[in-house]
Each structure stands twice: as C-alpha cells, then as structure tokens.
Image (tube, rainbow, N blue to C red; front, side, top):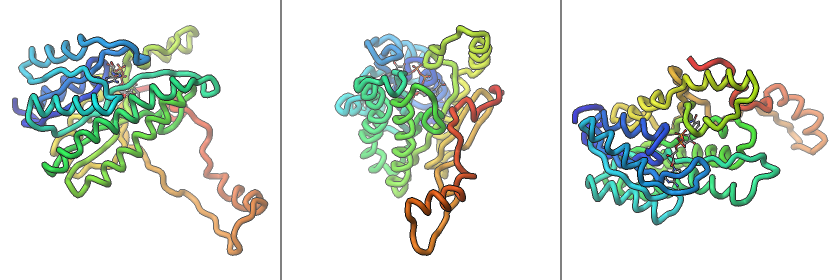
Length: 304
Ligand code: NAI
C-alpha cells in the first residue's frame, strides 16, 4: 500500500480501542504494517479480552491494510519483549513504537494505595520503558526508528486525584527525552503527544451538575481520530528532524509545549542563608511563580 508509511512496521500498544485504535487504522491507511497490541483490560486495568485487538486487525484488513494482533501486557519485561518479537516474526522488522497503552486508578493522594500507585506506574512508565527498550537493539542496528509516547497535561500541568498518573506521564516525558538523546547518533527519534480526546478514559467524568454536563458535551467534540495525523507524521520520514519534542492535540488545535528551563535567577556574593532566601531571593523570584493550576485552568477555552 502506498502512503507516508509505506514499507514501515509500526507497533501500537493499547490499540484495541480509543486513541490507539485510530492510530492503528491511520498508520495502516498510510501503508504501514501494524502490530495491534491490547490486552483488552477494563479502564482500571483488570481483566483480559483478546477481542478488541483482533477486531481492529479485521477492520484494517477490510480496508486493504496489513496487521497482526498481539495481546501481551506492556507492563512486564518478558511480555513486552514478546510484543516486539511479534512484529519481527510477522513482518521481519520494526520501525516505530507508539507507547499508548494506559489505565487509570484515580484517587486523592492522601487515600491512594500502594497497589493503585504501582498499577498505573507499571502500565504507563514501566510499560513505555519495557516496550521501547525491547525495540532499541533493532533500531540501533538498523540505524533508524522512532518512538511516539503518550503523555498528558495531568503530568505537564497538573490535575486533582491523579498522583500516580501524573507522575507516570511526566516520567514518560523524561524517558522520551533520554531516548531521543541516547539514540540520536543512531538516527532514532522520540517525541511525546499529550492528547485531549473523548474516550472511555475521560468518559468516567461525573455529570451530575449542569456545569459538568455542559463541560462533558464540549469534551465529546474532541474525537479520538483527531490525534492520529500527528502520530502518523511523527512516525514518517517527513519528521526526520523532529525529536525530543512534546506536542499536544485537541480537536483541530495542535500545540507545541515548552520544556523546563530556568526563567529567573538571583545571585548573592556571599552565598545564601535561609534568612536571606526569605528576605531577598523569594521576593525576587515570586513574580515568576506558577499558580497552583490544573490542566483545565490553563486550557481555559473550548476545544476548536
Ligand atoms: P483507552 O482506555 O480507551 O485505551 C487504552 C488501551 O490500553 C485500552 O484498550 C486497554 O485495554 C489498553 N491497555 C491497558 N493496559 C494495558 C497493558 N498492560 N498492555 C497493553 N494494553 C493495555 O484510553 P485512551 O483515552 O485511548 O488513551 C490512550 C493514551 O492516551 C493513554 O496513554 C492515555 O493515558 C493517554 N491520554 C489520553 C487522554 C484523553 O483525553 N483520552 C488525555 C491524556 C492522555
């Protein structure tokens, strides 16, 4: 099949539904051979169902594309390796890993259990490491490859009740940058996407008040398929110069996010004491403090 990804093999994790399913369909439509990975878990990560991944494979085949299903978990090293081996076994190579699989276990920090913490870190942060690391030797030896990693404004900005998720998602930003730096000399690229999309992941938002109902109606305009064109572009050779970046997509808006840099400094010839910090440093720095904002405070306008 001709297209921007002709000849490439793309592995999309968590591609049985939501954003990942649209990634798999769009990659295949652009000529990629696709590994559709999904364990078919519930939103909180429980259970296993081979159906969703296989169903997406059938959809791709019905449109004349090429795909295989894989139902291994990203959250363990051995099974993550098996996902990558599925690509090599079926198609003989691997060109792009899209780290998209995810779960939620929302709870206020002061009530969060160790189990809730670990489950989310395992799928998002550890899963991104495991699958990426398993593909790395192949990328290195062929002198090409790319990672597309899903982050979230819950990590980049902040959100209530998501300590596990925001820590994992900001961890993925650091991991993505490290992969971009460590593998640049092998022409391997790594970028992040922070999506905004109406999927089951945000379908769990309560809709009791009129305000909440109105907000959810707006969120429904953020179709999951709107994220896919950016992922396809990043996976293609057209993005050969693009690495180490953090993008966002919300309906028809595309964003490039800033990255942490010092924004103001103060210097004191004799060095600092706690008292001097209170009297001089903080008053000078305070003007640049960030308010305690959540994602929705920063993205304060409706999706376009
Ligand atoms: P979703 O819940 O519809 O899809 C996630 C998929 O991952 C599911 O099909 C699930 O079965 C699969 N999965 C879960 N654990 C897995 C495991 N251990 N191994 C393999 N597959 C596994 O969620 P959605 O909304 O499509 O999210 C996709 C990605 O985008 C996630 O990484 C999410 O954190 C991120 N994201 C989504 C946002 C949104 O607005 N929907 C906002 C910010 C980030």
